Each structure stands twice: as C-alpha cells, then as structure tokens.
Amino acid sequence: MGRRSGQGVYREKLRQAPVFADMVGSAIRIPSLRGFDPLRCVNVAVLLTAICLSVPLLAQDTAQPLAAGGASAPADPVSDPQSATIGTTREKWNYFVHETASPLTFGAGAFNATFSQVTDTDPRYGVNSMAYAQRFAASLTDIASENFFGDFLVASALHEDPRYFREGQGHGFWSRVGYSVSRAVVIRKDNGEETFNFDNVLGSALSTGFSDLYYPATSRTSKGMLMHFGIDVADNGFVNLAPEFWPDFRDKVLRRHH
Image (cartoon, rainbow, N blue to C red; front, side, top):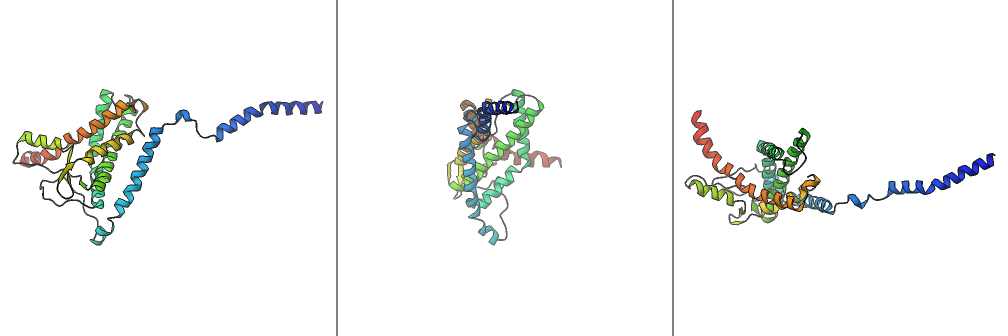
C-alpha cells in the first residue's frame, strides 16, 4: 500500500513538472516583448547621452570661474545689445538653473496644467484631481527638460546665447511684438551675431521626445508629439512678450503708485 502511494505521488510530481518548469521559466525569462516600447528605449538613451555630454561640457569651464573667485551670476533678459555674453558652459548652466528654479516656472506649470485640465487636451491624464496633479508635474518636467536641452546643452554646444535681448523703447509697439515673436527662430550667438535658433527648435524637439517617457499612452501619438513640438517652438516666441514689455509696465505703472 505504501509502495503504491509513493508511486502515485511520484507520478503526480512528474505530471506537474512541466507546469512547474513553465512557472520557473516565466520568472527568470526576459520580460515579454508585448510591453516593449522601442521609442521609449530611444528616449532613455537620448537622456543618458545628454547627461554624459553635459558633464564634460560643464567640467571644461570649471577651472576658470573658480580661479576668478567663484561662478558667474546667472543672467537675466537684457536691454543692451552690447551686453557681455554668457559664453562659458558654467555660465549657461547657471542660467539654466536660475530660470528653471524661478517662481515663473511654477506659475507657467500651473497655467499649462489648468488649461489642459479644462480643455482635456494633451497630456490626457483625465479630469479628476489626480489628473491635475499629473498634468502639473508633467508641465514642470516639460519646462525643465526644454530649458536643459535648449538653454544649456544645445546653447553650450553651438555657442548660442540663451538670454532674451529686448528691443526696448524707441521702437513701435507692433515692431516690438514682431521682434519678440521672431526670437523663436532667431537667436544671438556668443560673438553677438544672429543665427537660427537651434536652442529653441532643437531643444524643443529633444524635450518633446523626452516627454514620451511620462506622457500617457493616449498622448504618445505621432500627431500629438508633432503638435507638442510645434506649440513649444511657437510658445517660446510669445513668452518673450513678457520680458519685452514687463519693464515698461513696472516702471510706468507700478512705480507710479509707490
């Protein structure tokens, strides 16, 4: 009786062995290709490449500011076309950190998240409170990544000055509006010459590709990414209206009441 029982248990184990083998195989097998997204892998590679490039770019100018007694202060939008450029990589890094940590970044993030929430447009996380938090975080990441790729990485590599140079008073209103918007595709180089704005265009392209890592699947379409890129490029031009006209408003309106 014991011999037969032992044989029965043995046969049962043999019968279950393939199932057990499949379970073990599934546990140690490389993740299924059903969830594999090659575009995301490309974006991760782009991010890692950008980080690897930024380290030597930043390091190459470290000695100069230290020898001068510290890093240069971040630059703000300027009115004087002859103003000293921020030509070193460290100065551009400081500029990137300064503009990204500005309260205006959080204001822009809240505005973008609110607009996307009300209109239920990309990134389409939904319309509840959690969706708004996700949109706000995504907007901040969009701004930070575009600043990093454009105003630091591309500007450093191509020797472009990421600051906005005001046309200022002495020009007509519409002339200044046109000038501000045109800076979306025109930028000043470190040597003072004007050139195509790779900072904005290429930086926006890299930022758009990077957003594929955290945007929901419904917003990671070719059409959605193309719209994201186009809006980013154009938005940079219209955002320039603030530094162009804000000093006038501040001087003529706010200070008049103090």
